[in-house]
Image 1 (cartoon, rainbow, N blue to C red):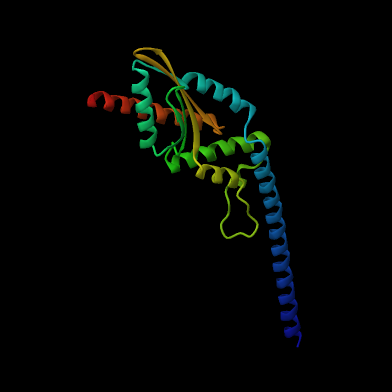
Image 2 (cartoon, rainbow, N blue to C red):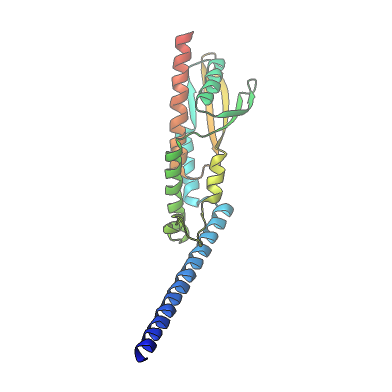
Length: 209
């Protein structure tokens, strides 16, 4: 009889301990979820950082403009083909004004995701969030992806505006700008993909003439 009571008490204590552990785990999970939700809301409201703004200015000044020793039409035609070869969709094109608007996935998906995560870690540290909030735990009922908005926007790809200015019969200036790219390293690598693609297309067009 005493043994039965002892086993019963031990079982009750074990159940109580398990319930207490489950409660603490749920409490920690809810606290983490609230932090993730706060981070997500801040990202959607203020996706930029003051330091990034200044860094982007430097990247744009260094890589945003190019001058080609080619005619306006040669550069314009090469740009349209180059954008298409990258999988970008031209939404607006006016040859007379030298304006092109396009949207496309400039970087490979894995590289784009890695750079976005790198930028988010820096964002978290700037605002005092634990970067581990970005690592969504699979199988948990208390998880929110703080980058949900960024991931959805990434599916719509990167927006570009391009302006061409004729500076002579055989000289054309191209101004390339990206919209909605906040992390400077992501912006820099995007430029470093577009310009070589345009150079290659101009070279190919030259050989076809």
